[in-house]
Image (tube, rainbow, N blue to C red; front, side, top):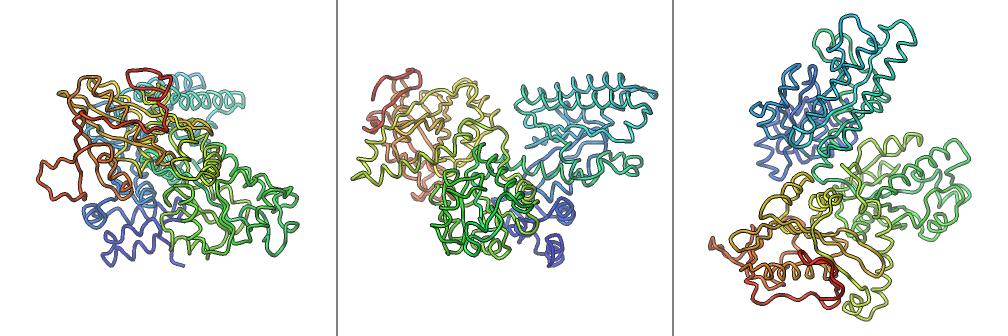
Length: 630
């Protein structure tokens, strides 16, 4: 079968590469690091303007790259990795050995390019360039202290997200020391340097440090001695390809494109054997060599679930035996309550995945599907192309490696809401049972006992607010999102207002579920953005927040509130939100009333909307905690 890079070369030879760029993620879906690097070389001459002409919504990511040594070799694998995720790379390269100047000169090319991400590749020369010709471990320790000081200063000075990396210790350096005691001392010094480098992230929210040790462990030699000597390339091609893959995952996270749900096949994926043919006694996840591999895979899946990854099942089996196995089979680590949805039937799996997404109120591009059958995976890629697919055929001992290879669930920071997500979906089932037993939707809402608070974010909540703005699609009234740093700056700026909504009901605390970003100027409150998690839509939370906000605007003596709605592919459900709350549409450009472009709304604050009767307001902006309904 022709591999992805070969197909890309064929498209390029036919002059179709730019027009077919939307097909590139599928072509490269199963490529490893070297395959992505080969694809990056083919894509090097890509005409970005032509791609955007055919596919105007393709994200273009500007990445500045600098480092201690020659770093240009990372560009091809990085271009290929971003292409795997449907993005275009715009690289800006620094010069050899000038990373301090590149990163600190405000007028330099790397700073003026306003990169989305800045990579500063560190290597052994970062330390060894600062030691004398004849050296010992104590000289390396002093060089490490100086390098850490420089890195800390860069983390504070460089705007946007800065990426550093731990530094592998090459054997060609360690074995210049002939006695084992000195080698041990050097190893300790080196590891202490890397550990302190990693800990810089604890107090530098814009800093990311990629740990190279796991990549070296799986990727082979740190460097090619010939390239290191003659071209000053201190990091080898295999290691750079693995590093580029990590950066691709990071870019996805920065763009809010983190997957939320892992959908698993069962037979020969979650357990060894075929339930329908072998019966419950014939499947295993322990007790045999193959079974132990499946048990290890289940433990890995459970670890992901503990950090907020939702789990679901899509299996071609009868539902009864599946639920019995998940409830009682002695080998299993995962049980039925661990899954937010269990679809066991004989329907096509692409249809099952669509059903699961709908049931969990997720978009299909929030799902990752893992299956051992090439035929099933091909059907899903064709029928549900937004779903990420993980191939788990062949050796089950590789299931964990293959599942984690693409970092689909990687995020910048884990929030309390992330950790509580699985429990929230259990509560969703309880709410569903309440809804089924209610005579009407209004009766259900009254019985739900919804409460809402609207107030400023607490210091630890900015990460969650950023995550909400970047990931929310359905109730995102302007279609944009903001990083944690952007939100912190806007919250502190004069005339700017950042508020967050917290919600609860009879089944528990929903946490931080919404945000409002606004500006007060010339007696008018301008709503610059409003976001609400899809899991609380339709319960009156959005109407309550806006009613409280308009009441506060009138209390402040403002004369009006203005708001914008920017249509996107997914926020059409919110199109009539502002008119439903008493806003009137204004069309200063004389448009014909269509909603294909941005729409401006106005509220004169003469007649305020009321908080829905079933909602209790617990906090208001400027008013503190409230004790009862408003």
